[in-house]
Length: 40
Image 1 (cartoon, one colour):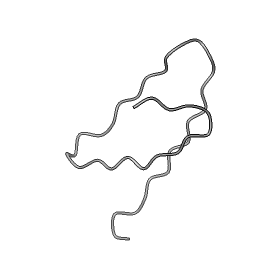
Image 2 (image 1 turned 45 degrees about the vertical axis):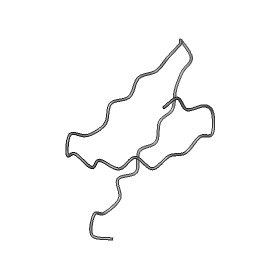
Image 3 (image 1 turned 30 degrees about the vertical axis):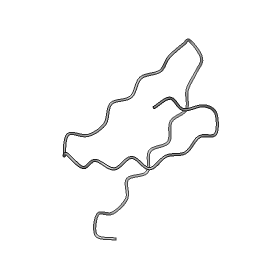
Image 4 (image 1 turned 180 degrees about the horizontal axis):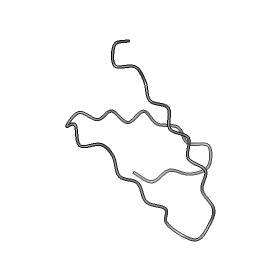
């Protein structure tokens, strides 16, 4: 998946191996990660 400015997604780890991300290009990137409680 490629995301642009203002994009939001919910990424669920269904395999237990986590996620990987990369930045394409030379622009600065701000990434906010919010971990949800598994019990909710």
